[in-house]
Picture 1 (cartoon, one colour):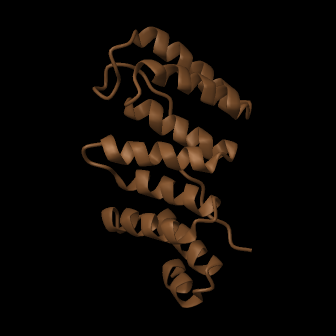
Picture 2 (cartoon, rainbow, N blue to C red):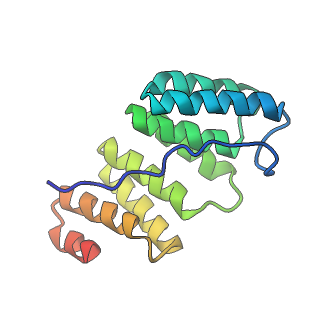
Length: 155
């Protein structure tokens, strides 16, 4: 059986990088640390609650949205992850390849295979040497029965 590569997971955040909000950075860091501890313990629902708390005050915080989306992927709540990635892509001035890659992973996990292909295509367009995107696009093609395309991506 073909296995997809994992999406890029939550990365934890600190204040002062320009992507954060106007909240108290110290308090935010404590909440993020707690969320990351929940993730380590595979208590994803609790981690999502922590990210929800952070996003109440700063709903367009790129880092918190990205981490919540990745945590939703881990939790198996793929539609929520897709919603977060959709929101991220709509507010980020210059979306990057990993956002499309991760949304592609969420689409693939939700069996939305054509959408996954589209996102992996965009990710590869932005980073032509990213082997994970090629791998996951190949896995998606294989699931669609398009084996020649899958082989080309794996090659």
